[in-house]
Image (cartoon, rainbow, N blue to C red):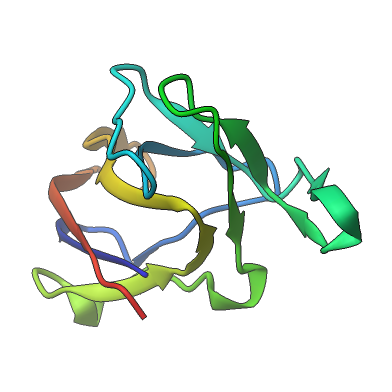
Length: 134
């Protein structure tokens, strides 16, 4: 479960928009503890069948260290918005079903802009996260 916290400036809500939204994660192998250096992403668009007809996942990967096949799936119906009233508090925005993988880091992006119509700055700052095992 991904908990997020941020500071919103003149923004009413933040959410993962579209099935192609990329959740950039660092994933740890539950078998050997290996954490690759590079960021990996999962999306709802990508859907890979699991061996033996056991369903599907957003990503299936073989650990480079121990060769174990692991998977992670985004639970689409758990994706929720982070709203203005959630400002600076932790809130669950997504849940993942993990089989042999554990998310250990998330790559958020602070975002700033200027709303010409409202004539004010808007932004998402100080994004922090934590993962909770269900």
